[in-house]
Length: 137
Image 1 (tube, rainbow, N blue to C red):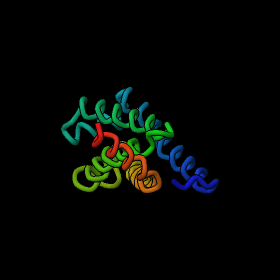
Image 2: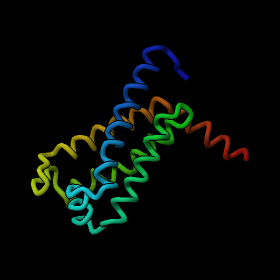
Image 3: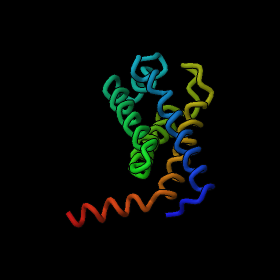
Image 4: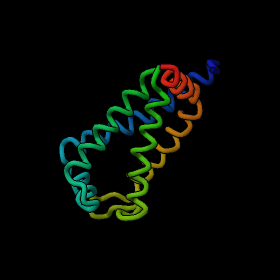
């Protein structure tokens, strides 16, 4: 695995960016803020979809910040955020004027998706090792 200084810096910057974005939305999901309730009500998933996605995002953030589980966290993050992006593109719309959002939530979801995809590519060796370990078990 490439462990150059620039690789480590890029990895940390991406990990922190993705984790901070995911973690800052947890407050809104876990406190049933009007924005989150509106989104998940529109999707027909209130309250369990809101709480479940919040738990998944919390787990993904922790895994991304732990050096030995970056790839697993990035993969989980990609799954969760893909659902958010598809929801925006199919049911919610890019902007959510009903809650005062002009596309910021969609933009943050895209940023998390890109950051997680790059992290997964950078740390793909972790996934290969994990698969190999389970295959030999």
